[in-house]
Length: 486
Ligand SMILES: [Zn+2]
Image (cartoon, rainbow, N blue to C red; front, side):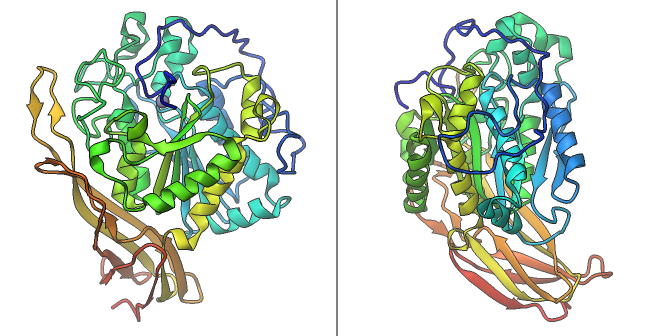
C-alpha cells in the first residue's frame, strides 16, 4: 500500500519495534493431530502448532524432520551457492511421488529475502505443514499434491536472518552479509552493530533492469543493489532454482503493507503482456486475503526485484506478498489469524490465496504443455538462452554505467515413463519482450516468438540426444512424436 512504510521502502528507525521474544519455548514442530477443514474463521492455531517465531536452527531442523517424516512426499533441496558466511541454503519439495522425475509444474514460495521480515519465512513453512497435514484428508489439497510440486525456501537469506534474530540493533537488519564488495565477509563483520545497515539488498540484485530506479549504489542505503547483477550468492540460488525448473507460479513473501505486487516495477516498462491474466489472478487473491493487488511501480518504482526478473525470464506469474499492516514482525499470535483469516483478520486469510496460487500453477490454461510419445526411460531436456539487460546503472562514484548484458539460460529435464507417453507442464517458449535493452528502457507490451530446444536422449545413450524445436504459447499444448530419439 502506497502510504505504508513497508519493507520495500527505506527502513523506519532501528529499534522502533520492541517485542518480547521468549525463545527456547518451542512448540512441537509436528502436531499430533491435523486440522482438516479449510473453512475460514474456525482456525486459531498455525498448522505446525508453533507458538513462537522460529530461529534459523528451527527452520533447518524442521526441514530435515519433514523430509524424514514424509520420505515419499518431501524431498530436501540444497541450493547450489553457499552464503557469504558459509551457510547452506535449503528448501523442501513437496508432492506425491516426489522423487519421480516427471513433468509436473512447480509452485515456488520464497521467504526471508529481507532479514527482519520474519512472518515471510513463517507463513512459507506453515503452508508446507498445512499441505502435509491435509494430504489425504482434503480432496483439493490431495489433488494438488498429485498434479504439482511445491517448492518452499523459507529462508533465502540465512546470514541476515540469523543476525536479525539475535535481537538488539541487529533485529532491524534487512540485507545480507556483504560487508566488503567482492570478498566474503568473515562472520564477525556482519555481527558488528555498526554494520547493521551494510550488506546488499538482495531484492535489488536480480539481473533484470538491475541498478536503475529505486536502487542505490550507496552501500549504506537500504536498497543497495550490489556490485553487479546476481553478484550475491543468495540471489544466484533463486536464479538457478527458477532457471532449472518449470516454475509456473511463484510467490515471494515479505512484510509489510497488505499488498500484492506484480509487474511493472517501473512505470516506464509498460504493462506486462500477461497483465490481464496477472490482474485476474491478483483479484482472486484479494477475495481471500483482502490485500491490495497492484503493479509494483504504482506503489513505488524499483529495479532488480525477484518477480520482475522471474516473469520476464520465464513468463511464470510471480507475485510479491507483503504480509501484515503494522510492523515487520508483529506479535506471533497474529500470524495464525493472518494465515487462516480469523480473529482480527476474520474472513481475510492468506491460506486461501496460497491455494489459489497453487491451483494456478497446476492450471494448463495458464501455462503450456508439451506432450506425446518418446522412448520409455528417455531423458527429455528443454532449454533456451537469451540476453536480458540491466538499466543504465548508478555507480558508487556517482556516474552512470551503460546497460550490462545478463546472459540468461533456462534448462530443465524430465524422464519419460514406462508407457512411452509423456506430458510435460512447461512455461511458454514465447517470452515477454523486455523493456530493458542495450540502449536503455522503453515501454513495450509484446512477446518474443522463441522456441524451446527439446533434446531427447534415449536411456543408456549418454550425450547422443536429438534436438527438436518447439514453439508453444500460453494455454497451448504442443503434441510431438519423438520417435526413437535418433
Ligand atoms: Zn521485504
